[in-house]
Amino acid sequence: MAKIAINIATGSLQKDEIIVGIDLGTTNSLIAIIHPESKKPVALKEHNSHSLVPSVIHFGENENITVGDEAKQYLVSDPANTIFSAKRLMGKTYNDVKHNATSFAYKIIDDSQRSANESRLVKVQVGSKFYSPIDLSSMILSALKKQAEHILKTPVSKAVITVPAYFNDAQRQATRDAGKLAGLDVLRIINEPTAASLAYGFGLPSIALNPPKGGKNDRGLRPWWRNI
Image 1: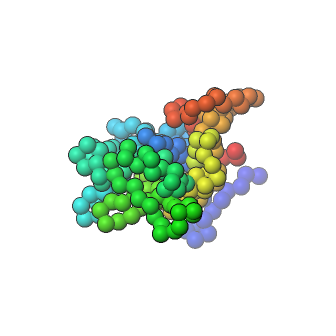
Image 2: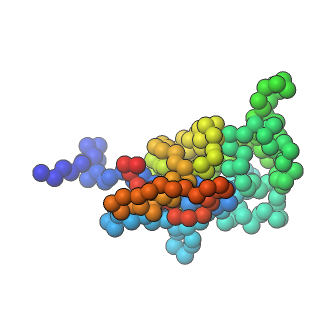
Image 3: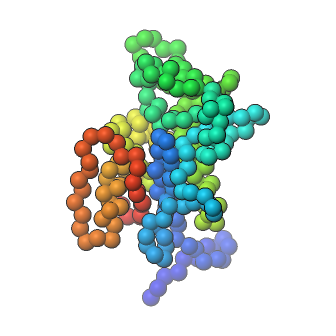
């Protein structure tokens, strides 16, 4: 006998909860689902738009924060208040990035008064405020979550997020924390090469996992599904 889930509070039929997949990228990010009917991966996008969302955040006047294409246009006109490549700072100490700090147009600071022998955290200063890489990444994830909810017309609270294979435990935990801050229950953190291999073999009877050697895989199809 078929089982039908009913929301006791509203008396309405309970739909299966949607789990989204997110590629939180250094340059661009993307959110996708497995279509409930075709069972195929679908990258979500707004009408007359594209699925890739620039991983850029702009802090405007009156605390107006924009993410994506709208923020990207300020990279040249307002670089000090436009944050890009926040992913490169995830889980890093100040000592990890201080020699490359000048390559960023915005201000990267040491977030502690600890002794020289202790690890010091990274924060980004925008005006008089300070943001951690987790804060910044959560803003991108929040924008993707909002986009998905607008397109799907349903709340989104669970996600699988990919990370580079070289991410250490601190960077993976920072990614999970960013998801939580964005209102997402991060069910899995998956290596990007593994996700790409799984996507290639989706629906096939068998698959060999052979991630590419060296480098990072920023591009490629990385869909997600339940029961990973």
